Amino acid sequence: MNDTTFPPNLRPVMAKAVTLEWWNVGLSLSTVAVIGLVLGQSQTMKTVWLEDMLALIPPIVFLISAHFELRRGRSRRFPFGFERGNSLGFFIAAAALTGVGLQLLIDASFKLFSAEHPTIGSVTFFGQDIWLGWLMLGAQFYALIPPFIIGRLELPLAEQLSDKLLHTDALMNKASWHGGAAGCAGIIGLGLGYWWADAAAAAFISVGIIYDGVIAFRVATAELIDGAPCALSGHGLAKDALELQESLEKRFPNAEVRLRETGRVIRAEIHGAAPPHRPVDRAELWPGDPARAWRLAQISFIREPEPSSADGDQEQRESSRKRQPKKE
Image (cartoon, rainbow, N blue to C red; front, side, top):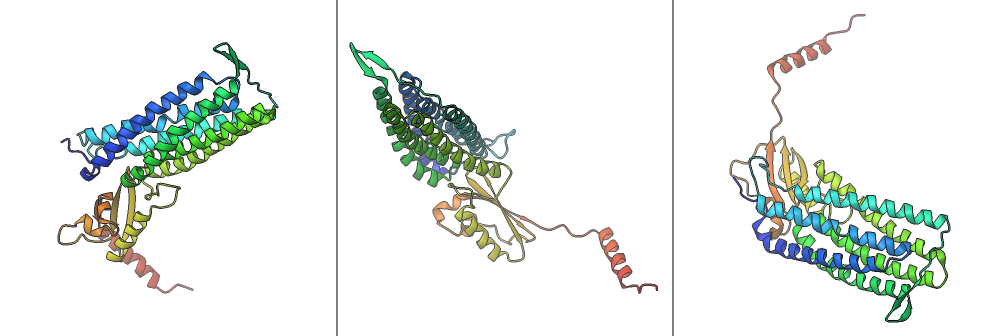
């Protein structure tokens, strides 16, 4: 009993995503090292450095969850496999994004309101005194390149896999290079004598982190408590799930249709309808692109319980009591 629950036709796409995330981890480590060498007293650089360290969480969690999804499969202890491993990883990444973003915002706001004046000194390089800000800008420009490229490569893979964790990582990479651009502005402003530019840029970066984290946290929480399938971007319902619900409601008009998402797949329950006489082909019930029919992993028919004889006698007594004339 060790068959995998992962759709076989998605294995090549998943292999590309795994390779890309290994590259993501390696390049993120290099940017953390480069920026760490030139931190100085700049709040912006510290924020960018922590953001780059934070950016390691989604790819690492993705690689761990992908390992369990692809290789562990079902077992006696986990009879449904590790479909929710991706959901758990998504929740961890969202919580980390939100928590660290809040901490960075509090730190930047404190330095801004306390009017702390950071300074950027000089370093001696081959016998020449060089303003450390130039090295900071060089490190920032280097740190812009990997997230810009990797984030764009992750988005189509996240769409194909319906992988919210991978999509969150793409958003994190987008926030990283946006934050890097804001960080460059903060360093330049500090060099021009605007002491507040450094802390303001750090606060701007942290607000972006918090926004992405809160959206991801809401979706991850809904998924873990069997909420309706959500879209990859934002907290609205997924388009394919809405189409599936509408299709099932038309096919079973007197029944209640309930959809929930476990990881990247959807499970449907039809309450109050008898199952068809012939076996149900899930691909036939999928209303959209047939290549995406793997999203419908299960469909269950649940009949409403018949009232027991005791319930029937009770209802009859209540009905008889209501028909009796009231005494004046």
